Image (cartoon, rainbow, N blue to C red; front, top):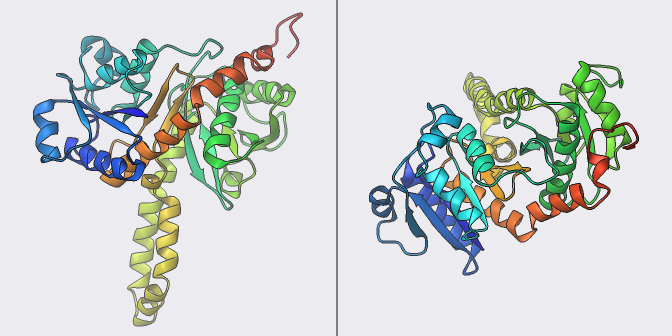
Length: 341
């Protein structure tokens, strides 16, 4: 198993990425080989003489402030670009990047291309629910969608859910403003019809209040809506911590209660902390690409690499291609005259 890591992409610098990679190597054992891609003069001092990862030099960096598409073209030797070329050439089995999300998506589309039956890519993330977790997609790769895109997102999300959640037949929900099939805008109504006619286990519309209740293992939406939901969810942990700290220190009785509740608070923090979820795969491109949070700590980078290893072991890309191409491919396309869904 060979994984390339964009060491220059994170907000906290290559040292944090290096620490995460070293932790992942220990966890994954001798069967894993990691490649740290980026400026050698910054990566090697961060290694501090530690052995294990291979450093691959890349002389350019795409920052968070740059326009993704133009930066990818202007900087072919960026750490993201070099990592994608390694994946395209078969030198590695997957790429992990905590860099500019738009640049990762653009670089993957330009360098790897889409799977033959996929019209648009989607970023999938795990979302905590009352029971286990659910897969939410798209959370940022395709802001403007057609109904068929949401149908294909659902199929790709179902494959990801089988691998990460161990759910053989995941229920698929459509994020909407009401339960009735006619609710929502034209996109939602048309996507509902496609999903209902598909071979997927469609659970119907899922409202925002239902998202955390585990009504479906896979929830689909356009990338604009999904990104808003994701960013709001990320803010909940910090806000909840602030409320608990303020309330639990307001009196001696509450301070004692807060101390007694510390184990429960720790469990809640783990359930809500994005650092535990291991990055978000970019589904639909011809290769395994995982996008980590830009503010990833070493623990978050380690989680992302370990989660990527699971996707490599379970042949994520091949299984998506098989579902969309081999299993009645036209059932995941927009119906045409004379071409039933």
